[in-house]
Length: 281
Length: 179
Ligand code: SF4
Image (cartoon, rainbow over all chains, first blue to last red):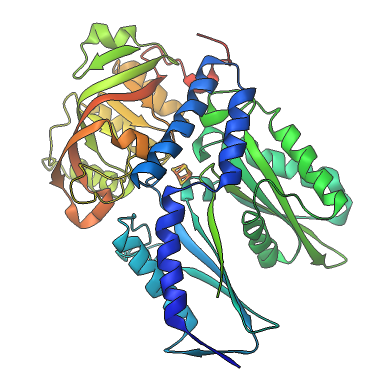
């Protein structure tokens, strides 16, 4: 047994909230720079220049890249040999989020009840938390701060096995087309295929955690990712929706076993501000 | 780049062309979802608004909190279409321009044409950079809404693009190389 104080989870989450709000990961910066070289139109070039300049300003002056600093989603992989002290990990996550968003001057974007009261919780809690028990004596934390301009353009469809690869592709591209300029292109597109109605959506979100420099390890799914990226970039939406070549920076697919009768597909749209972090305690 | 000083005369508004980049200076009000809901209810009930809508320009933004010494935190545009249902009535009551991101409905376009107004588009996800062009901020109403409160901001050379002009032309319908 290894004793871990949940305060450590709180600390790490609080720190990461501030960090991912102001700094793109290096793989995303590279993808944006590459996108910039592929643009030729006046507006699309200007758009990419603005985004790169904004990235620089945000990081050097510690100002959030985007004012929508997102809702926080946390995945905890807890080693079975870990014994937590000082309380519950989920409470620590929420304390970390509250501290990170308050201390780092990030926007509180969470409301209590979605339909009637819609009262701001003032500290961006609660986070959406997934936990999993794994082997070992470590705790792995993955987190994401998801903006809603793009979240609102996400979609899920229960396809049937007969729809096959074409059905999946058509649905993904239709979702990207429908997101258009509103969801802040260039996008990172998370796709979950298989599982159930709920788990394929979680897989679509998980797919966004992968660096854009990495593809699915299964060559068939890597090809699907590459094909979808090429086709997405032929839609012509372009950076900020000003037309051009860089509609998406990467399409990330995660798949899971499913029922003999089903082929669920979820598309989680993410803007260029695809903020996530991974930490191990 | 073309510089615009608010308020714009009718002649200046007629000269705006969808797709052209502009640097905007002057007084702008911030309001987004929750503030619009309240403003609209006040209009419906015939109550006086907390600021004069006549010739007002509204920026759809909910900034991050300012650090000590900052005027405002990160302050890029939010998706404008969520405010579409409010626009015709707001324009009837004097609002002349909007700043946001993304496509608008046909009804918004018609209202812009009818009132010879304008819709400007700012870069979505560039709130750090855009915050540098906001030089003053004063509270106006609904402070309980936190980032969604209505505030009066002074912008200086705020970079944006003409999204919809008074002829109803739309930046998102232009081709890549249309100048
Ligand atoms: S969609 Fe992304 S870039 Fe656009 S406003 Fe939301 S968080 Fe910011």
